[in-house]
Image 1 (cartoon, helix red, strand yellow):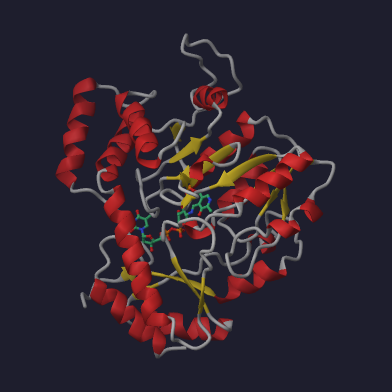
Image 2: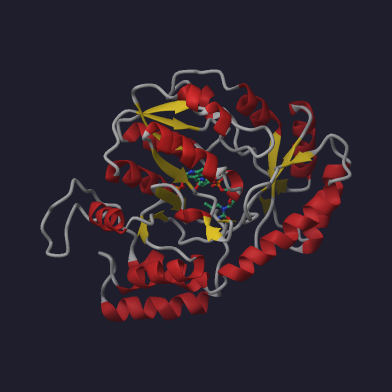
Length: 362
Ligand code: T4K
């Protein structure tokens, strides 16, 4: 085993020379941003790879969520999950909307559709579920509730590039799906995000919003801002995209190795991947108690292995930024869940080492 520290993830990176080949083209063109050739190519190739209708790449995943809220002109309450990264919450608040929490399912970690209607008020305008760790939400149940109550649906799909539902990219669901292309995600542009929608008109509006509300004639026709991705980031994305399929297959293989190694461990449970085909982007394990988790984390840290407590704490408890509402399932899970290292360059022997340390540590 190398003596290098092992973190929860590492960016999936193409060989540097393949990136620099693309950078040379950027230098030759002198176009560094403003929806240049690399951005347009990346959007087209992402649509081809994932089978998407429309894809607008943007500065980051948080901005992608904000742009979705802005494009749908939402003002009011947005129902979302407490088991997520703080960005989901921040984006809702930064767009002047009010987050209302709906608790999760203990097995899928996703928003519990059977609890959504109880959270609807006369001020509710939308539902914002998260495909947690790339595990598809119950999109049919959520869409049916949205239809019934005339609500919009924005999926925070930050983790879900490569996940599918009934053969279709999970990113083609909802009025808009917003994803992250951050360094820690399965596919990255270092920092980046994207908005996907099957609604062509809305897609054009999102493209105008990310560029100060400009239309193609450079007239300001929308309430926009600056949400652009640069040519340098897009070039990195294009270099990495060549390995997208390989990274996905590798994730699935290592995910299965962890499951094979840990499924006999008493008291350890795993995410229920019952709907669709996930992208295996994270490997969470759930302990029976926080004490067990802390013992395991300590044993791994002692071997320079640094898993992460995603998502801890449950965001409904972040009372510096949101009023507390009790979310018992999310709060309980948040105390007992640990994401183990999982990334492209992680060796098989390192997975086996992590399994053996974990088995004897809690
Ligand atoms: N919605 C959801 C559900 C999300 O999970 C996120 C982001 C968003 C929305 C917002 O998307 P963005 O606006 O960020 O595009 C990381 C990421 O910063 C964040 O993008 C991600 N979720 C969150 C789950 O994780 P940290 O604070 O855990 O990252 P950090 O720096 O501790 O990195 C984790 C490990 O990755 C490190 O131990 C080492 C490795 N690493 C990290 C970076 C940044 C590298 O090897 N290279 C790197 O460049 O937040």
